[in-house]
Length: 302
Image (cartoon, rainbow, N blue to C red):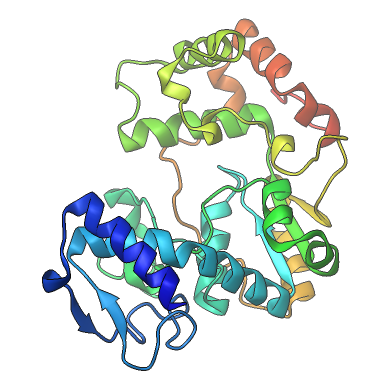
């Protein structure tokens, strides 16, 4: 282990031009609860503590392998994993799971609109109380089921309870549009019709920078099927039937309080999603997300 620490130390020194005299020893036990646990990667005398930039690289290089291993063990212990598909209430569920079970579940980055935050109960989330749902993340957001299966291993994946939520693709894409716009990633003057045509252009040519993140264009089915189009999760809940389906999951996990939190809502009025579509945009979404429509039995509802 000392050899590994020395290699990482040299890598940090080379990148940030740091030298041994700048390195101080300082115990980090408990500094990152659930991620760094004393004697696993750090000896009794404490961990190598370098400059802020160096320490960031240190965490990236030395913790990542352990974090994945540690997370896999915790998943096996708790016996479940949630595949979080964007705009299906996934952030709320992840935040709750993190609050109840801790690592490796939870959500480290939460985006909340100020107006919506003011409407929420103080028991759950306000801009001043967001740390109540903030946890150090081990795994990235919106990992595909097949990616997570490779991380934890097929044997563990087969043993645990895996679940997800899906949503009507016409409604989900509209929600995604408002969410991205709310974050400021879309110009205010970009209308929903323009967004759909940009999405169509990206799917054909792959040159639209607006969709540089895969969660902005992947279908829900992409998250839960393998190369043989086999579904990799045990339970698929529907956003439209969230309350009933979350009860089934809560019962399976033995967690009655699951399903009481709602955050990261996109801000839009109460108009039905169909009112935002014309014939052209309706057909574009139908073509792009045909797999979701067929697999989850969705249809465009006026």
